[in-house]
Length: 410
Image (tube, rainbow, N blue to C red; front, top):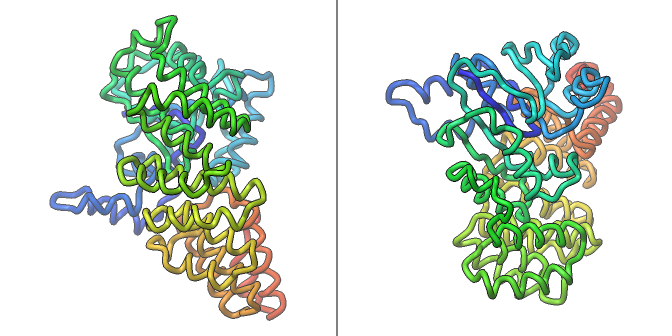
C-alpha cells in the first residue's frame, strides 16, 4: 500500500526490534491492540507500517516551498539533516531531485518528497494521513490566511481522486488550540468536496479564521471584543468559545477565563489544550508566575498531557524552584521513557548540585532518546548533554564520554 503523509513530520522515527516484536504481538490473533499507543505515534507510525509490510511506498507532502527553488535537492536534504528523524547521512545523500520530487529510500522504504501541487500517479490503494499542523506552516509559505491555505491545498490535490474514507485527519497533541477548528473544516470538505469551490465559505469558518488571525497577530483586546460578540451569534461553537477565553486570560479576566476553560475542558479536549496555550502566552509575556496556575490546572484536569506537565516544570525551573519542578516531572505517567522530562530532571539535580543524581537522570534520558530512534534535540536537551559531558570529564569517566559519541550529530 502507498501511504501519503501530509505534514511537517516524516513518521519514520526508528522503533527498536524489541518494541516491533511487541507491536506484532499486539496485532496478532488475540493480541491487546489497546497497548499499541505505548509504541506507535505520529513520529514513527510509517516506520511501523513499513516494518509490518503494510506500507510499501511513501509520498510525503511537505508544507514548505523547498521544491520551488533551483537548489531544491539541497534544501530538502538540509531539512532532513536538521529537522526530520535521524536518518543516516548516506541515505539522505542518495536522494535525488527529478521533475519536482526528491526521491529515494529512507529507513529502508521508498519515498517521494514533494508539495501538494505535484500530480500523483497512484496505481495501488492509498492511505492519506493529513496532519493538521501542516496548514499553519503552509499558510505562511503561501502568504495566505489559514482558511485560504486549506482551500488552496484541496484545490491542489483535486487530481488525486482520494476517497474521503481513506483519509485520516490527525490533530497532534502539540497543535495550538487556536487551530483546533481545522479538523472540523477539513472533515466537512472531505465529506462535501463541492464546498471548496464555493465563493462564499460557511460564515462560521470565516469568523473562526478572523479570530485566529487576531490572536496570532497579537491583537488580544481586539480579538476578545470580536469573539465576545461572535459567541453570542454562535453560541454552540466550542472553538470560538475557547479562543474567547484564551483572549480573556491575557487581559484582566484571568480567573474567570481559567474557570471557563476548565468547564469547557470537561466537554472539549481542545479546551484542555487551550488552558496550556493561555499559560504559554502568559509565560512568553514575562508573567512566569501567572502562567503557573494555568499549567497546574491543565495537569490537574489531564494528568497524562505531558505538554502541560513539561510547561509547568519549565516555568518552575526558570523561577529557581528546582525541587518542585522535579516532583512535577517525577509524577508523570510517561516516565521512564519521557526524554524531555528526564533531561529536565537532570537539569534540576544539576542546579541542586546533586551530581550523582544528575548523571543518573541524564543517562536515563540518553537511553530513552536512543530507544526512541533519534530526532533533533532541542536547545534545552542539548544543554543537558553538555552538562553530562562536563560531569563525565570532571570524574574522568572515559566510558561515560564514549556513551555520548555521535549524539552531537543528531
